[in-house]
Length: 269
Image (spheres, rainbow, N blue to C red):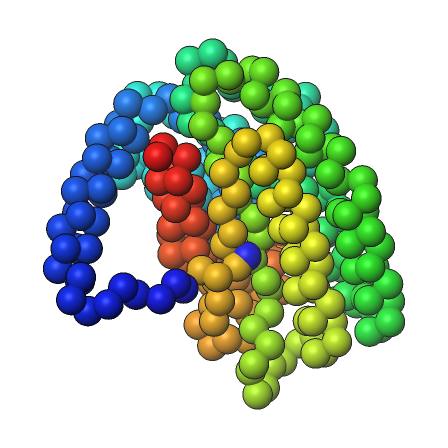
C-alpha cells in the first residue's frame, strides 16, 4: 500500500530542517547492523539482477534492502529475504540472521500465508465469481488466522534482536481503478484483488502496532503507479511467471525504498 504541504512561508525553514534531519538520519544509518527478512517483495523478485548465490530465493541487487545498504553503508548488512517465504519459513530459516547486535531489521510477510500465488492463478485463469471466492477465502485467513502467526513471529524477532528497531512494510494495491481502459482482468477481479491487499495490510499494521514495530504503508506511494495506471511499478503477467504481480526495479527504488526510509526515520526518532 501524500500529505499536504505546510504553508508557503515555512518552506525555507522546512528545507533547512529537512536537510539537517537527512544528514542526521544518514549518520545514524551508518552505524546500523541491518538485517533484511521477508518474502519475495523484500527479496526483489520481479526487479531482475538476481544474486546467483541466493538460488531460488531470488534476491535482487535492485531490491530495497540492497539499495538502502548501498546508499547508507551500515556497519553490517545481512540480506536473507527469500521468494515464497511465509511466517513459518521466516521463523525456521531466517531468524538466525538476527542477534543481540542487530539494530535495524525490515520485513514483508503474510502474502504467501494467505495464498497470494494461488489467488492470483485463480483470478487470471477462472471466472469472476471464482476469483472473488478465492479472494474472500484469503481475506478470511488474513483476518482470522494470520494475526496469531504474525504475533508469534514478531515476538520471536524481538527475542532474537532485543535492541533492534523493526520496520514492517505492507503490500501495494495491484491495480489502478480509475483507468478508462485496461487489458486483462475485469473490474470485478481487480477490485477484489485490491481489497485483499487492504485486508492484509490492516492485519499486518495491527500486528506491528501490538509488537511495537513501525508499519510502513506503501499503498499511498504506489498510488497512480499500479497496473493499468500507464506508469506501472508492478509486473503484470510476465515470463518468468514468478515475476508476475511483483514490483519492478522502479517499484523497488521509487516505491519500497522510500517506504522503508519513512519507516526507518520513524523508528529512529
